[in-house]
Image (cartoon, rainbow, N blue to C red; front, side):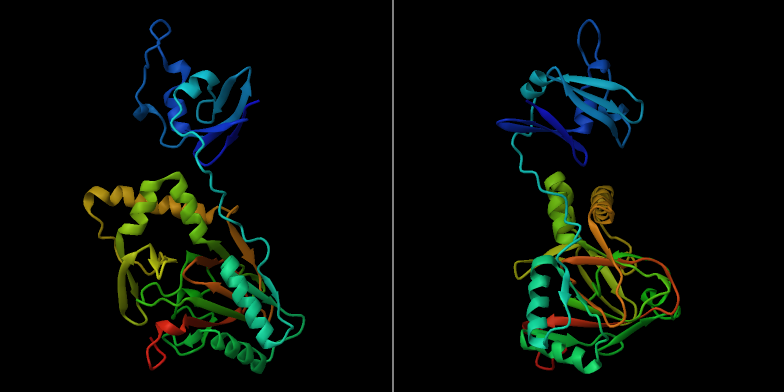
Length: 351
């Protein structure tokens, strides 16, 4: 018994002992309707097809794959025997979609600081983020106590351009983060050679409406992209772009995706990148790769939205996760603290 599933840009046919993957473009290029009735020769070029192909319906009936296309409602038919003969991707590993992070982020904040620090670090390692919920307000002393416990375990709070703690509240003359408009997915301070490893966000006052935080796992999204388009993944990890921090007037040139001490690291910020200086022959390919990666991250199936109440805290791995925020109304007030790993810092503790 054969079955068919639609994935991102391709179909998978599963049989009891093997699977076959076929790109949508390959299938439409080989549609039986676009062949001469007498000779069987193909009548079209692949360039004649729309740039983007969609599918409205797929089914297997009587050992024939049937595909109804979105743009012209045509139904193409492919005998399974013919597909097996021309298969080019047999038993290919299929990575799952990037996780939506809809579970296993929350940590009970009403525990001792040592236990809380252990649970937070475990959640960060497993999921890339941790949310600390509380039923009662946290005092500043309590917050500092478990930050000290994090530092005992190898994290170090480090200064940003305004000091150890940054207040994020409405002030249009300062930063995008201090306006009430939506902010797209990005990482913090990608323009630093040693971008912060972790970011802590504490809610002081929630917005009246909106202000939802968005998170997406860029490491999982990149692996997923690589399983679909290896060339795109290679471009993102080999072509360097310039990230510029206007507040500090600093810059770094690095790939969007890299490795640090064997670990994945993403640098991404649409508002802190200089004009791309990519070789002419690679510019269009670079844009296609970049935009496909962003589309995966933006897919509602792949990211997680959350609202924090007063004194609740989010920590996320800034080398693994991208984050953003929806637009809001009202005097929303958050505080942020950046952390690096102890071995990344110099003797003065500032890196």
